[in-house]
Image (cartoon, rainbow, N blue to C red; front, side):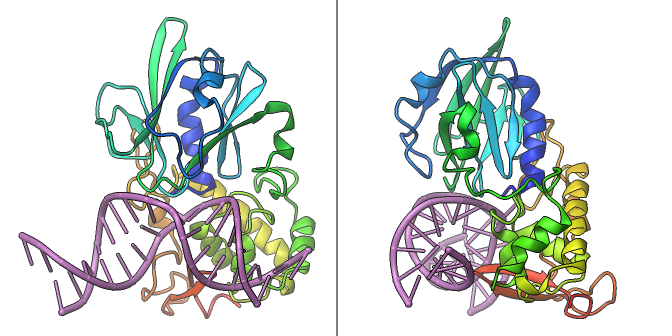
Length: 287
DNA sequence: AGAGCTACCTGAAGGC
DNA sequence: TGCCTTCAGGTAGCTC
């Protein structure tokens, strides 16, 4: 489900409830998500105060008063439910979903002063995962070592992008999905960014250097910023913290639009499969 | 070393 | 209506 924009929307929704709160209890419905949870997971969390809620690529990272950080990845279908009061729209994060015993895997009890909140992690496909790592060595942790620059940060530059693409003999679309090239771009926004950059997804990555990399750099940033501003993309059931649905999907230029006319030139949008994932593009606009 | 495939797991949607 | 197949926003780990 979530790529960088959706994870960022979730982060913004959860942060007010999580930052500064204390974890008073952690309940595990099963010993693993996609991977086994780390040894003593609940015990290492209980009693800790959450300092902040950060994002790195598609990961959420919560540094704790214990010196460890809670690392969370939503996989394809992970979602958080905050509170326990009223149903809202179905979503990745919403207040008070009905209990789902089959897929509510982790339940955090939070306390801020005398206010208590429940945060539930639900994940039908169970591709998501959680981990703990020393907060001071996060960059070296197995999840973040080798991860590329944050696309909205200063470390992501046209020259840097050009340099990493230069050595890659893989289709440009596949390179964009590689989290070591740039963090947080997934299948939707890879197609969308390539359309904006007018670059073919089939083009060899090594050929997208110089001015082309410059265009791609700008396109990646623009599409991610706009998607965040739109509250993310709601394909099935993603929603923000207040239950609001993202609406960026209405602005897709090519994603999931195979057979429909290109919004720029009118030619039919094409679909192909690269590295096992669907790619959408306009063969007239993108070269 | 780098690139490409498969596995992982469940639910939704489409075809018949 | 129901059964079957296909597809889905993720990453890790295996092959070549």
